[in-house]
Length: 365
Image (spheres, rainbow, N blue to C red):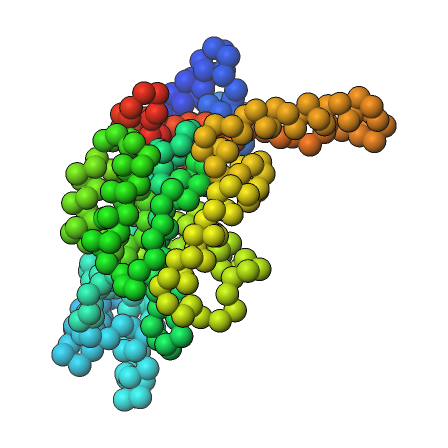
């Protein structure tokens, strides 16, 4: 309860804040007070006193200390120590006994600090959301994953290793192998680093928690190259959305083989053709319908400017077709986010590691 002197102090502080130019509602919110309560306090003035009852109410049917001790003894007995209250209560009822309801069992156990994991198996490990990252140029943020390619032998698959640049959506590296192996993944990253000219500390590589992603050889390769790893939560595909979306695009292509691949050569040939189409011919909706290769090379700015000019000329020739509406916006997407935090401004990023030239890795603030 708020005492009389404390009330007067709060009223005075809010009045000073309002006099200094603050809004009364905002000042009340800061001190955890509703504007209606403040009005009531100001109306009552010096005669105001807290009229809420000061006595501590205890229900008449509250469990006695002996009953609480009995509940704890039952819950911790050899027979019931491995069971939750939802299992204890019906077992007691089958024996013609009633100690308390499930909620009361839980309340007593909570008060005694015994609502932690009570069973024999390992408790669930809490998982925090992955680090929020964003990129403002190519070769800052990569995403990669492995997908299955069906073979003619049931239960056997080829494995497509695919690395994409999140900013440009370009597939910067791929390989098809007959096995999942972190050493093969490390070789792929080495090849990409050499081809793209990556400097230490320039790239963050995001992936899921698979074995090839966290293998010793793969981690050693990343450390050698100065590539920072980033991981999704286990079994949460939404944490790696760019790679998942890329695999869906791949497997829903009209020319995706209706029958399984006969051998590694046929699989590699088809994937090679797909990558060439995706990088150089596919107009990607997430980057204003330019190709990933054009955005990766920085040519998308000129293309989008030309499109804006085309639409401006069309509107000048036939203004009534648009009326007061603007033409289609061919905007350049300056920042691309991976797992952004909710409620944060998209432009709020801070540098997390240095890079060569003007290239930086950004993290959502």
